[in-house]
Length: 225
Image (cartoon, rainbow, N blue to C red; front, top):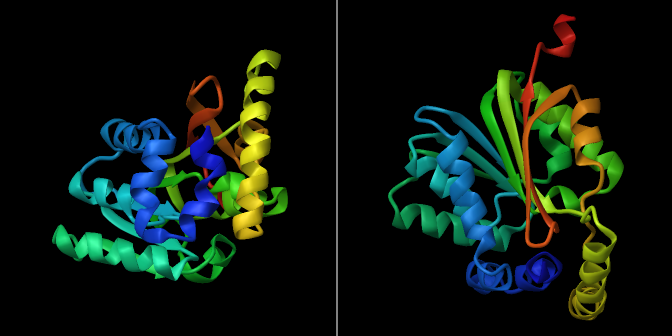
């Protein structure tokens, strides 16, 4: 769980982000991304990577044969992502955009993507922003398409919540001192997915219940109802 709290610190040193986030997550960050690609990404999928960071998940999707559009608000992260994509000769399969999630309505067309992926992004958004991004995700997904979200969550049991709090509070203080920002856990994501029109088809927790993976499907578009 330390990885999610330290994410903002690592973002300030983008060159160390990939190594740092994987070490601090005890290898879970890369494992989750590989599992997402193995289980849900297929050849010729059109994939949107929300908050693509340094491009690790976008690259994995492209290597599986998908056409990927990734966006992130951090130019430093995107610079690293572009270099990694060029090194792997994937420039024809991955398109990167510098933008925030709240700009989706200005950039993407209705039913443009087969899959949407997002890791460690929704917990950084305020509830109204989450609602907006999920509504936009619903709009840009094709009927039957999947949204796949992996993020820090609040454990179900009291004991695990106490353990998470004991680890999280001092790390939040350090993070704020270094970056003047803080992080939040993702709450009620299933309810938010349902409110946006999605049907959750799979969910899994790891790291003592502090990391969640959620897969939801889009049904009939709201504008056709």
